Length: 210
Image 1 (cartoon, rainbow, N blue to C red):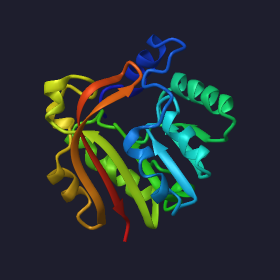
Image 2 (cartoon, one colour; image 1 turned 45 degrees about the vertical axis):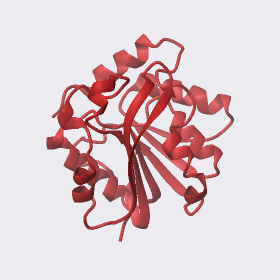
Image 3 (cartoon, rainbow, N blue to C red; image 1 turned 120 degrees about the vertical axis):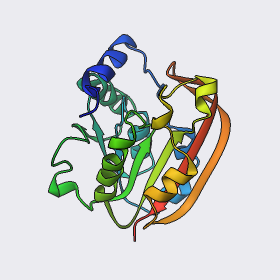
């Protein structure tokens, strides 16, 4: 199993106190695809953190489930959802646990969203993507936002291990049997709480399940 992700992330979210480590606004790559998101009714956000993306998705009228390993993060996410007057089905769960996802969630979602979920290396990435694929219904889509290896020069967020980062080749191979509708590599200034701030080397993917 990878590092004890639960304790690593709980400490980070606790250390942020009442602040939201990555802010309360949605990720920009996700938010810019608001029109496309309307083609679905259900969404699941994996490794959702403190709720900024799941709450925003709910505000767009989607029925949203959020999965997060840290109880501290889930508590903060519930607070965010209550403050914004939306409903999200928050689940505290480890997406990499054996036997996950449960049968009721398999093939259940029009959108499966993974924003900066690069906390695992290549040996677990395949499993992580496999879980996301299992959650997606036929004709549904996965949306991913991550960092490319160039991010190590900027050090404005994300993992410090180059093998955790995405290249277009890695994502093309991982979704070779899906229809890749969008795969973009770009740089922009990110302002997402204290956790992600400054010039960043980014990659975004939208892929559709056959």
